[in-house]
Image 1 (tube, rainbow, N blue to C red):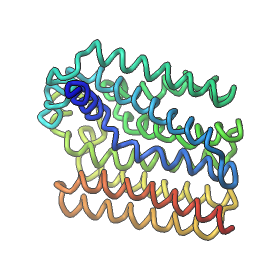
Image 2: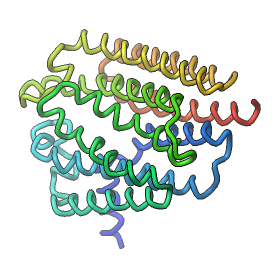
Image 3: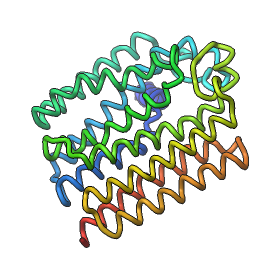
Image 4: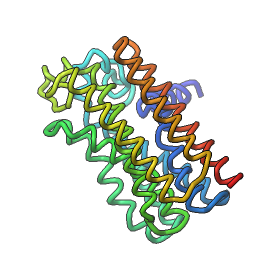
Length: 286
């Protein structure tokens, strides 16, 4: 029993389960807006399983492909995919099972979800390759998480309305922007290993400017989402608070690079939750 618990903990560390907090709120934001409120327990359960299996697939595949890179990076050398706690074959099986699980969930959602399931898996898995030949890998990661709201609205309405594209675009630039800040930790390793990243190509100062531009675009797209979806007071408050939190994130990183983890995990984690809660309130009272 202890061995099983330890193995589950190892897989939890492998995929960084707590990072699900970034994509889950925006799946349900899209579902709430599409349904004009509560969308039902069936879609709630299917939405959770879809998000978890998709993310497990993406993270598991990334760790599987990055075994050689992670072994040469002091920051990642103790990860389960490197130190032997999880074998390559176990990771491969984990990735396949989650891919099949995601497709199975999509089947029970609706036809459009099923048709989109494999293209989505291809996109979210491609991040692992892009950083080996293109510094646009950060944008690919943004697109991967930006698909979450579109998946949410497809589950509810089996359509892709324009407002969901705006919401997803905001998520894309949000994720790409904070990934740039997070990647500053690996700038020297990326240069040494010949990996492609914006920090290693353009340097710290330009990277931080690009991140600020991405986050400015985030706020613009989320504001457009609120306008086009005809949301009300609480949704506008969500956009304003998001802008303030993103500004605080940049303040933390500018002040002290050692606070990148706080900026990455704490600020962005709360941002998604607060945005979600305010959208719920918006649909309750307006």
